[in-house]
Image 1 (cartoon, rainbow, N blue to C red):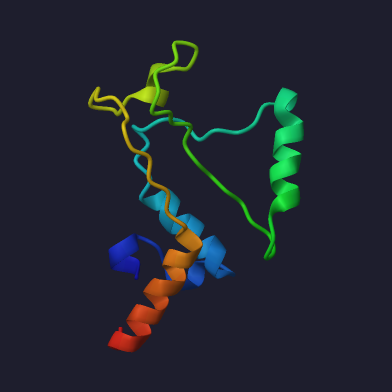
Image 2 (spheres, helix red, strand yellow):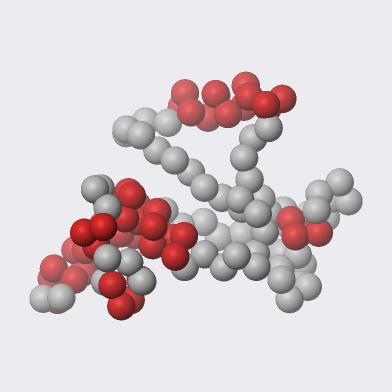
Length: 109
């Protein structure tokens, strides 16, 4: 796992922490910024957190839009190469980490 994901598996205390480290090690910093709700939208943040089930959860994401809006920074609607964003994909790194561990255990890795 160290070679594939540039992360030592025993360097973290939990799978979510390991998955987060793998995510940040592979995050392309030339893409847009990670978005956090400003204080004026505190009620939205609280509503989302109140609806989370299944234990502690931290969600990091990039602010991206498929529709152009001049009030947003250029990076929100465009890729680093200048193309307009037309599709947004989201991956659950916590689930991905579990699948990878199972795969390696089954394959003798």
